[in-house]
Image (tube, rainbow, N blue to C red; front, side):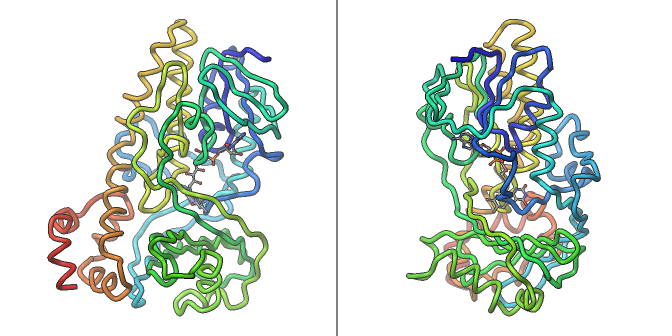
Amino acid sequence: MQNVDVAVAGVGVAGAFLLRSLKSKFDVLAVDRREKLGYPVECGEIIPVKEEMKILLPDLDDYSIFDIPKLYESNRTECIRFIAPNGREFVSEFKMHVVNRDRMISEVAEESGHRILNPKKIISFSGEELRLEDGETITAKIFAGCDGANSKVAAGLGLKRLVRVPAKQYLMKNVECDENSIYMYVGKRISPGGYAWIIPKGDGLANVGIGFVSSRAERGDTIRKALKRFVEEHPYSSEYLRKAEIVQEIGAVVPVDLPYQKVVYGNTVLLGDSAGMVISHVGAGIPTSMVAGELAGRIINECLEEDDITKLSEFDRLWKRSMLNPIKNGYLIKTLWDRISETDERLSRYLSIVSERDMWKILHSKIPLKLRLATFFIPVLNRIF
Ligand SMILES: Cc1cc2nc3c(=O)[nH]c(=O)nc-3n(C[C@H](O)[C@H](O)[C@H](O)COP(=O)(O)OP(=O)(O)OC[C@H]3O[C@@H](n4cnc5c(N)ncnc54)[C@H](O)[C@@H]3O)c2cc1C
């Protein structure tokens, strides 16, 4: 058995940024099941640049965490091209880093200087100890659940599973798209209940993937078939992917629920996907997980310095003040989206009343007035559209 000040379950985005924020004088032990931290990359790897983060999460008191070092960047994009089922394209200015996420996670975690135990799988959390696959246990003054969408820590706290959407992604080479743009395609035929994306990493490499909600798909359709269709047949994407070849293939899930109302339970705190801290209409969880790691580290340092674990509950106040509004907006947009996208024809008709400015707001997790009003009239509008 090991007894430490802080036990960090999982070293993905939230875990790495938590480690970075925890002071070196504390005895910290992080555990991750991966042999190489952050690898394989189960992510599109986009992070808005700092100026965009000020719009996306306007209530942070410090944005320096988003000064992403150039060495983690594989590409920088200028805009998002959002393509409706009928081919209408919205072009929204939205500058992004496309990062090498595995490198960022492993270097941020390792540079923290804290101890990391990997590859080692956590099999359960009792509320008092983490139990590892080899029977070893870890007790701690404070536990941090950073173990992602299938969190053992959240399960150990007895929390209800958050709603999650499966996603599948290829890393492809020889992709011939505009490398200054990120492409988002919507429509039931390619991505029921989600969207499909092409995210250029530079030099012809790109992350190409889809989200897929089977209850919203045609009978017999699967995520595998849908991704194949998107790559090979989709009229608006396949011109970029004609010569593309698959380099790597991954599958993972994204939480699309509202976060837990409370993420601190006694001496245990949940961060990132394990808590549902995701802007769900676009499936963005890297920035929110980075912020959560940074803020939780600040609070944990104080708890340990003042020998007062009750102060951990301050994290609930802090993360909500910093991020809950945009997260809730994303959830509302996603819920509305589900109600108007029963068929591709209806979705295209709805999108015909959305302006470029509206789309810019939607992508930045803001709700245009039109959309807010529409929430009350969907049953009537659905009869017209
Ligand atoms: C296909 C896909 C594309 C995405 N694209 C983007 C994007 O472009 N931009 C964006 O902002 N968000 C994106 N997201 C969401 C984003 O990846 C997550 O929200 C973010 O990674 C959450 O960080 P986290 O640290 O909470 O969890 P993770 O980064 O998932 O980290 C969890 C860590 O816990 C470890 N772990 C899990 N279970 C155990 C266990 N039992 N024992 C030991 N270790 C364990 C894992 O190995 C992992 O290292 C995407 C998600 C998917 C699935």
